[in-house]
Amino acid sequence: MRRAVVEYRGWKEGYRCGYCASAQGKVSAGMWAHSMTVQDYQDLIDRGWRRSGKYVYKPIMNQTCCPQYTIRCQALRFQTSKSHKKVLKKMLKFISKGDVSKAVSEEEPMDSHIEDAVSCDFVHRGESRVSEAELTPLNEDHPDRVENEDEDKGETKEEVNVKKAELASLQIHGDKDAAVPGEPSPSTKTVHAPPKPGKGADLSKPPCRKAKDIRKERKLQKLLQNQRCTLEGSPLQAEHQALLLQNSKSTTNQPKSIEDFIFVPLPDDAPHKLEVRVVRSSPPSSQFKATFQESYQVYKRYQMVIHKDPPDKPTINQFTRFLCDSPLEAENPPNGPECGYGSFHQQYWLDGKIIAVGVIDILPYCVSSVYLYYDPDYSFLSLGVYSALREIAFTRQLHEKAPDLCFYYMGFYIHSCPKMRYKGQYRPSDLLCPETYIWTPIEQCLPLLELSKYSRFNQDAKAVDEDGIKELGRVRVLHKRTIMPYSVYKKRRKGPSDEASVQQYASLVGQTCSERMLLFRS
Image (cartoon, rainbow, N blue to C red; front, side):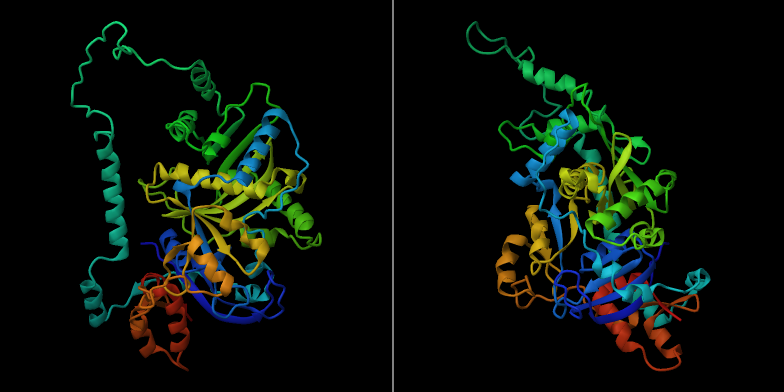
């Protein structure tokens, strides 16, 4: 059984903020994650945590200078705005005609700011020096009382998720034989009487089709010649993308979807070719290793030109630690997406070279954007916005195989920093209440944030954190390669009590994660 192993580092107060430039305004909690299941991380980001490399941190919202609210976009309901359409059309014109727009985008790429993890020396001091041997459990202690409590607890969250997955799988198979709303059941025979002359269309013949639609369908067969998405050595089939495009236009007079702009048939003489490849970064796949140096050079140029880093700062070590290393375990369940769950790099190849890389995590319920870097020579293509839209489209694509996966997490929304409000333009979206961890539509949150930079979004005064810590003794601990409840460890521990630190850790990760993850104690 996979288990997350973490070292809690506690709170860090009074360090530099990269958003408001306050020298000592930042306050956050952090932990070093040696390993972590995708379900653990999903549950953590749903409590306001976020990772950079193997470091996982959570802003202390009511104390930090710039509160950072977790934001997610409802990918299945997403509609492109006018500004999004401009970016998509600009890319299409560049690929199909070679047109270069001189307009400079004012919108920021997804999380171009990672000062929380990169610039604060708190993280560098926090890197673990614990050996692999110490992290490998040999046995597990179960006192009778704790065992009985575990047995009487009922269904665990894992069991509930398994049952949900089984029900989703059954639903998928069952839908094959289900009647489509508005259409006759397959078991019902429909007899069409031939119409009388001049009394309407002959229903025994296929409906008439416009020549324009016929030409469009033919061009769909060439869809991936110049523009395609590849999942780790397995090209996404043209038929599937064509189906997405057809489904998005199934109803007349419907607003154009992302797919209508992205999966557009290109002319045979298109001057450019764009390909998007999804490669697993942790553990590194062969394709990731083969393109590592080229990807790093793009990152180095990006940091130097866009963020004004000196030439010696964007080192390979920094690149690896923060954008390649990940605590997430790779998982490939049969009911999951084709590429599996875990950490990936989504590489944008233009005419045979990498021009941008989106660092993403694919989790049970979402695609989580981690970072984006790109070749500054292609800034005119608004690659930050374009990549976000591609990641939303990618989320919708993964949903076809994994029905629970339907959200796109954009990191943090920072209302007190005007240049970081752009994430609120991806609608519909929700912000996470910092006290009850309930998702609230952003439209309801913005008026509150105009009044105060910190706000509780849940207006039910009686609502509480449903997963708040209730039994500290049930927190799972890894001590001397033995897994045990904190109640047992506390009795064996020598020296001063660490109960305050464990209480703080458990309250931030929640009861569920505290009982599933292993808190390392030396």
